[in-house]
Amino acid sequence: MTERALRIPAIILAGGLARRMGGGDKALLELGGETLLSRVIARLEPQAGPIALNANGDPSRFQGYGLPVVADSLPGFVGPLAGVLAGMEWAAGLGARQIVSVAADTPFFPRDLVTRLQAGAGGAPVTLAATPDPVRGTVRQPTFGLWSVDLRDDLRAALEQGLRKVVIWTDRHGASEVVFESEAGDPFFNINRPEDLEEALERGADS
Image 1: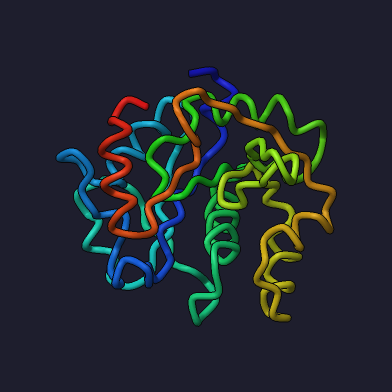
Image 2: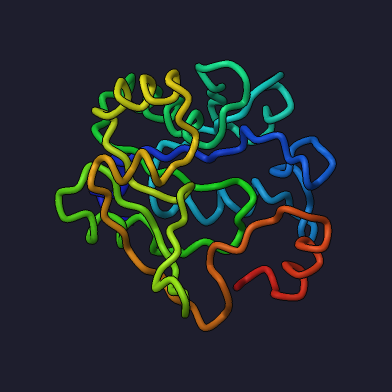
């Protein structure tokens, strides 16, 4: 881990309602004997730190993970941007200028995510991960990004005005993107449905 990466805090986004999984915490689902959250932490710790968890409700259910839990600062479960905002506000309190976000339900994200986002930022205040797509060229991964905490007031205002779609807001700020490819499958494969857990098991823990 580089000294530069050490100074970039990270937020794990776990504040959703998991409707397609029947509710509850997707982050606490088990995959091969480990929770998704444990797997995500293990991938993220070598890349960035300190790490916080964005989750709503009783934080004690995550007490065994040793992470600070920061809830959305806006009511109503307004989507992943609310989690990014919570992370920005937490990181600003640490004196950080940037924060990395990852999703708690995506156990195979790249092990070089942070360094490549840093390298591809090009001075943009937001840099999103993306994957190649044969039709659309690239597909952005809006929960995986490098964010300037200076945008937190602008983001809060946008959310209070009803904005919910991540890429609409990031496009306003000239976001850059970094394309990730993997022969092992989609590195941003996420667990949305029970059958996704089965597919992830078939893919293997070390993908």
